[in-house]
Amino acid sequence: MNKPTVNMKLNLKHCDVLGIGFGPANIALAIALEELMPNANVKFLETRERSMWQPEMLIERSDIQNNPLRDLVTPRNPRSKYTFVNYLYEQDRLFEYLNLGIQFPLRKEYAHYIEWVANHFQHWVEYNQRVTLIEIINNENSVGFSYRVTTDSGKIYIAKALVVAPGRTPYIPPPFDKVNSDRICHLTKYLSHVKQWRQKPTCKKIAVIGSSQSAVELILDLSKKFLNAEIIGIIRNFGYRLKDTSPFTGEVYFPEFVNYYYHIDRESKDKINQDLRYTNYSSVDGDVLNELYLKIYEQKLDRDQKIFVKNNRLITDVSIRNEKIRLSIVEKNLKQVEEDEFDLVILATGFKNLGSRENEEAYPPILKHVESYLCMNDNGYLNINYDYSVDLLNEISLYAPLFLNGLCESSHGMGDAGSFSLLSLRSAIIVNGLKQKLKTSLNTSKEEVTIPFLQTVDK
Ligand SMILES: Cc1cc2nc3c(=O)[nH]c(=O)nc-3n(C[C@H](O)[C@H](O)[C@H](O)COP(=O)(O)OP(=O)(O)OC[C@H]3O[C@@H](n4cnc5c(N)ncnc54)[C@H](O)[C@@H]3O)c2cc1C
Image (cartoon, rainbow, N blue to C red; front, side, top):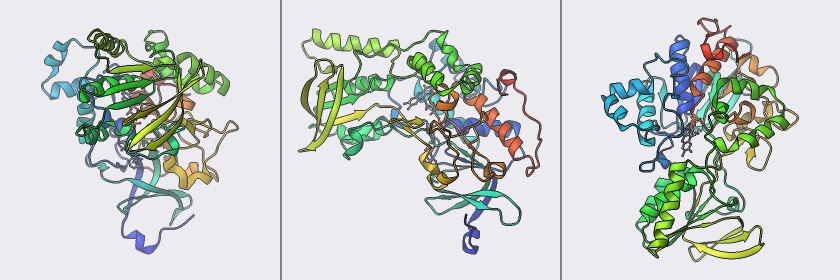
């Protein structure tokens, strides 16, 4: 472990809690810190120039997937000034919004809401700061450890505790992981990518890989943007699947479920994931699913079909030839192989969870420089405590706690990474963890925060 040099000291900024990333997870944490731990010296670092929620997927007319009341704060503190309802009120849009009679707001409106909340925390956030290095250092004048965090602009921060919330890593499945082409992009780059190709009349055939909500939204959007192009959805399954919206399985997004899931063994977790998978993954809301089906039907009626679905297909190889993406595609039941060429390929292939499988990663890549201190369990999973803190070797976690926010689906269940539903309650759990773990060094109340929903579940 290194000590900061004298030179570096000139640039050092100290704080109690340093948040990495300022997306919904850490914005919800900022609210919880302001409301529950007001004396803490807090800082957040964010790569982007301002707060933006999934900006590359702000597709026209797309709506959100969560009940809007399960926002950044309402389930924890419905009286907070940061609720979605108060946002509408302050924008003078409450009556107009209610008059829409919609169940789910437009994604662009929710993105505005998130940005509106984020803007209240300008004093805590430094934008245009991409964290490139996290190190553990010995404290200079006392026992114990701290974090030294460096950004791409060379700024250095010393923090007693870290809350890491960079969002999940996009999953690029094989064989796409071995090629590098500006004609292939993951959905997290969609809008800016498509903008550059939209001007080019040569874009005649586009593939969308995957069977998620995003995949269907992308097919519909591409068909509006590239009027003369063929759009081909390629999926492994028989068909795009309707999302499981049963209120019974929907209880997976209850706080009690987190407690239940956290305490069951890995095998049981895997089984329950399989059971509940279609509440959030590889499935599509009825409205967009029916819109797509009707659109294809109408195109057939007009003898002008432009959207096609290749089902039961596996992509076994990809290569780039004459500015085309060439895919080897196998019909997995008939075992027939076909070769096809595309001008663009969009990967709606999801994100990586923490774990040891092919589509998982052992730890968030941002922690690679502290890898040797991370405690892993026998199944190859990071040791994550119920309060989202990570176990570190050499008792480092006792002095310098590290929390993961928005990355813990493998330990805490379905609602933890891919959903807003539990963000606000999770923030309170993390604040409680921070209070307990920093109690010797912070001049703040050491009392645990009591939150009605959590009384029975956070033990
Ligand atoms: C297209 C799409 C639509 C979705 N729609 C919904 C929905 O309707 N409802 C729902 O419940 N969930 C939805 N989700 C799930 C989504 O993951 C969460 O809603 C939410 O975005 C998670 O917030 P987060 O803060 O954990 O991650 P992110 O939103 O990914 O935010 C992470 C932030 O960290 C920053 N960052 C990353 N690395 C660094 C670094 N090295 N240094 C500094 N900053 C960094 C990023 O710039 C980003 O701002 C959607 C996801 C996608 C992809």
